Length: 171
Image (tube, rainbow, N blue to C red; front, side):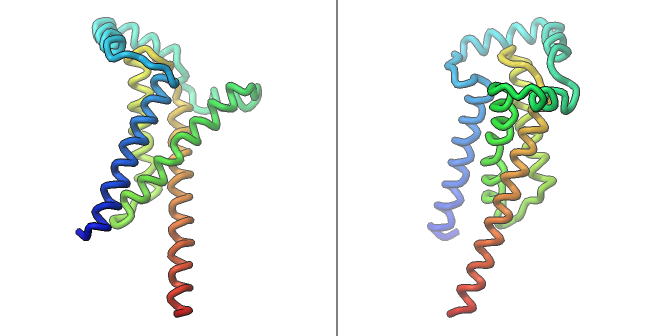
């Protein structure tokens, strides 16, 4: 692998890792600092009291589109930030996946699956650590954001390739 190619390869993966750590910080901790000791205590409590985890799951939103519909009907600033924020925060996920799998290629379906796994992991962590509420609509919004990012990547890549073809033809 050429040095330039390796540098791009490594840079994109480092950027993706930084993005994922920021994603965890924002989604799980809502910009607050939460110590590892607190999280460890929450995890131990949840593991020793699985009934509490099950109850928190039942109290969450398990009905697809329920909270999205309510938010769009009420349209408070908090609701709008929640809906559009859950989409926006996963747009870089789709873009970065496209860049990382540029040579092999990645499909929209694969992007959806990767986003769903990450989003479900974050929702599960909120549930298990009792630091948020499980919301199936967040899975839909996050996955939609990743898919939007993927489509942006595809469109921008196609435009860049078309421009390169035009420039090659002019030479």
